[in-house]
Length: 76
Image (cartoon, rainbow, N blue to C red):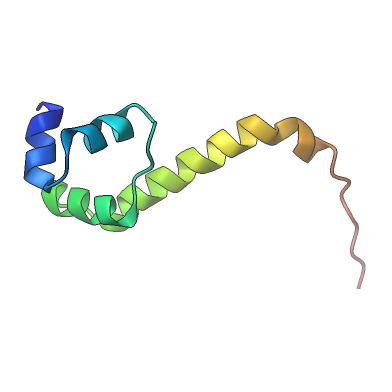
């Protein structure tokens, strides 16, 4: 399936599909609903994939900073 075929089926532009595929644009809730309808999945499936990617990218970009944060011990 080409990006154009998918874009036409989803009712969005090929540029939008291409940017999502290349990681230049995030999948929005609107995109998630469209993809879920087309592929007969849930919108949560697509949003969770985006959230997982965002979390991974954030961790990779900031891991050194996160390591500098001291753990606090909370006692009852």
